[in-house]
Image (cartoon, rainbow, N blue to C red):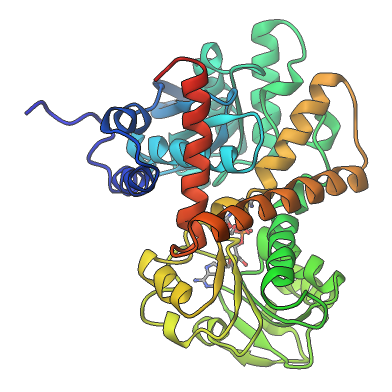
Length: 422
Ligand code: NAD
């Protein structure tokens, strides 16, 4: 036995490979093709020495995993976290390949990470770290090669530093090298709302298919951060009644409906939704089991499990968070007739808006918010129906998530065949 590669023992990577193998079995893919798909095309490790404010040098490690480029340049975020490992980065890059494929955008999958606790760095140290990391991977990225974006603890300011560093290296303004840039550097205002907007869109379309439309339907949203608040906002705009929302401090419930703009104000002013007056306090666990039509988990992973799935009453679930439903719970909900729109489909609004930003940067054009959101609406609505219809036609004895993976992987495999890679 040869010793394992640096990513092979990582539990996140092993989970990604398990999912790949399950979908491959349904598609009847041979083992050698699975072997091609389970490894990244390239994994870069870089050393990032940072001169700290106290004069000492601290060394951080960073990675960029480029999983698959059959459908286009690699695309995916960069995260800063003290527990980042190469295995996690490879797994996340594989998931980006499937997400981008399912979203129907011309991108492969990539992901980056730096093993650092950014809260322990001063703003100057953080800028030095960001610039040095990007300079170190500059030969491997580019508007036609690999286009990073923000992820955990990185943001539009980080993208501005990356963009500037890369532009200095290549000698021109390379607008298309990163997305989710600040608006003054070619980013889109609409990027901020895009993931929540997309989650709301998929809930709206699933409601049309499953429960006769969105108008007047009751909704509970777990998590009131970037994703949850805009999902709630747009669903309310389209006539749904948001009866419960929550954050890490707890939840609020009013069967007559919450005023979402008011809840946003309370959250911004007091940092939690629980200070909203016109509602009853509930726990995050109670929120998930409320008698509502639609449930939006938009906080953290593994909140819907085999324990609470039998008690969930919603008929439509649209996953804003990554991985909120365990595979066991997914199966229970499927058997109960609940549609769970999987994360890779429901929360693809951010990366799809990134593609809109990138393509307009490259044409030298700009878009208004309204134009950008209209485009996102068209793309995601079409995607939802394409995946939903194929699920119902070919894979309806599986949860929608399994069908989504199969459809996504199949598209990548077809591109690889056409290119003569397999
Ligand atoms: P965020 O930090 O802006 O908001 C997270 C929200 O969840 C906050 O309101 C927080 O109080 C709440 N929360 C934290 N722990 C909780 C708990 N135990 N119970 C209930 N609520 C809790 O984060 P975000 O950007 O909105 O991301 C939320 C989820 O969506 C994550 O899983 C993220 O990976 C996923 N996601 C985000 C994006 C994006 O563009 N922001 C894109 C795809 C997926």
